[in-house]
Image (cartoon, helix red, strand yellow):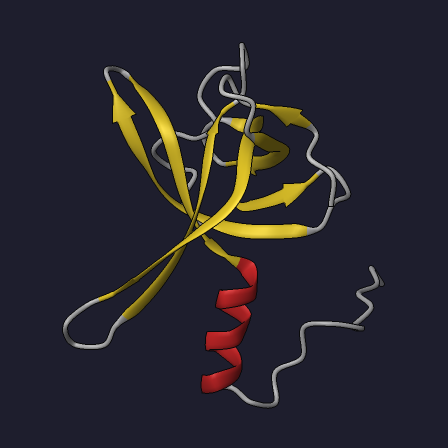
Length: 122
């Protein structure tokens, strides 16, 4: 993948979008780096971070949780779950990578199908 743009320090950034219940369609910047945490009890978590796009306002707000974050190609990237406020705005949005969500769902429901299914409106 080739980054769409660069951050202020020259680091590569990808432009992503989401359509949320509160903020509707917004654009943001994703660095491509995932975070991993594990508690002392073995509970694992994966995170992606999306920064507000330059001049585009907040990427997310309260009420946008559960929104799909997607790439410019329309591929799903992550499921939004929270933001980091800075003053009256969200500075950073946190989301769970879609590949991690699917992995956990398949552990619980091994016969679930996510790919190759066609949905039609009848």
